[in-house]
Image 1 (spheres, rainbow, N blue to C red):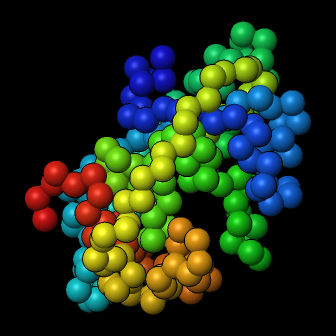
Image 2: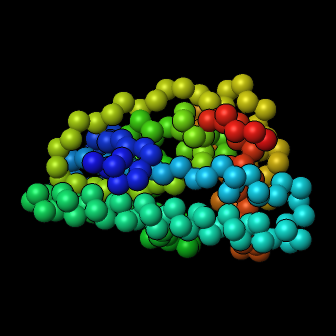
Length: 224
């Protein structure tokens, strides 16, 4: 059903997989009797990301960033349409369903922390893994995806999380080319190290950035 609505990715995570999530940001903090987390993804157009500048001259070519942001917003709206349709379908079947939207995350601006983490839910739903760029990296499309999720008390069989490390042998251009210097080489066993406040401050001065998304080689059969 979900793929027929226009989605490219679909996965299910079990509620138990979020037991270690921060208090207040677990699915059961939103829907107390939730049993399943449905995660849906849509691919962004490659050419829409490829126009993003990586040469540092951001203000001179901000129209390219503006077009990327518009595409990003459009995909988010399409995902919200799909997510609502799925949640409403479940509700009609007698289940509770909460839709974590793609267009807004209920972000606490003090800590830059969303109500629920779509990318972490996608990892548990088997859609991809977290990369050094702090983004979800999918085998099919790399990080060029947007996500939405539905929490429900319907019991659904969960998918298996992926174990592949896409960043192990990468040149890590996402780190070296980050114009805000917000990304660092991960330490210990963490998948990524990012100063999200530096990233956020940088983004406030331009329509978009997403260099870390553009330069990621995973999922690319595309011509650079």
